[in-house]
Length: 234
Picture 1 (tube, rainbow, N blue to C red):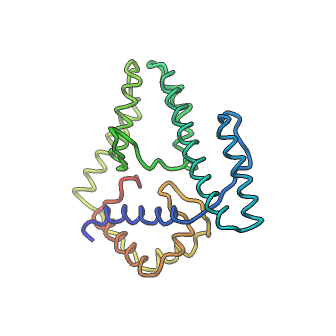
Picture 2: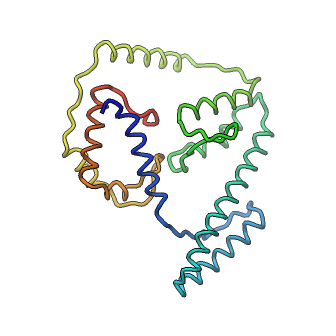
C-alpha cells in the first residue's frame, strides 16, 4: 500500500464509473424559457417516447429514449458552453465581482462535479492540472485587476506553513482504524442515489462487498501513517 493515495483516487473513479454504467431514465418537468427552440422540440419528443415506453415497454422505445436523452444532454452542454463563452467575452478586466457573482453557483456542493477540461485537443482530468489551467486562464481575463491579500489571509498562510513544518518535524501518533469503523459508517448511510462531488452515491457504497471494505481500511490506515490524502479531499 505504498501508493495508497493514487490507488484510492483510481478506486473512487471506478465507483463513479459504476454509477454512470447504470441505465437511468429521467424526465424534466420544467423547461427554462432561456433554452433555444430546437431543445424544446427535442424535450417534447422525449416526453412522447417516454409515454410510449411506459404504455408498451417495447425495447425500441427504450433504445430511442436513451439516445434522445444523450442527445438532449449534449445539446444542453453546447448551449451552456456557448452562453458561458459569450458571458466571459463581456467581462470587464478590471472588475472581478461580476464574474464571481455568476461563477459561485458552479462551485457549491449541489453542483455537478467538473470531470475535466479540454485544452489543446486533449482532455485534462487531474485536479491539480485543472486548477492550474483555470488560474492561468482567468488571470488573463482580468489583467488589470490588482491582486491584494488582507492581513488575515497573510497570517493564515503563515500559520499553514508553520503547521506543515511542525507536522513534518514531529508527526503525531497515527490513528489506528479498525474494520468496525468503516463497516459502521457504511451501515449508517442512507440509501440515496444522489452523488457527491466525487460522483459516488451512498447506494453504491452500501453495495460494496466486505473485501472492498478491507481494502479501504488499509488505505485509511496508510493515510494516517503517511499524513497524505487525495488532493481533492483538501
